[in-house]
Image (tube, rainbow, N blue to C red; front, side):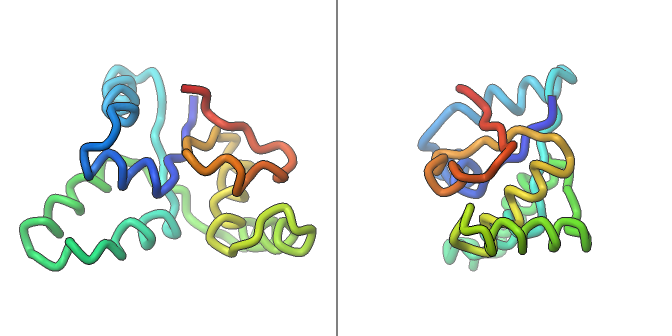
Length: 127
């Protein structure tokens, strides 16, 4: 099963707020799931101002390397544009994340399901 991990899940885990990602990482280690991010998610995660220290930045790099990357392509951009034009999502980042999920047939792991609720064909990971 392919899962794209939304930024809020990464942040929650890195701040110690939830154990959800711990179990998903364990399942990835057992080859039961594949965990992905895309460049938008990476950029959002690395906007954290606490990463100004070299130690925290190095730790963040190690952490993000635990995930495979779904690259953004022209097809991703076309689908994201459609999602924005149809008002399925309100923000470019959410459009690119949801388009990535659709194109690689991955479920989205997020706390913000309402931001993506109108995207046709998008499947959310059930905790």
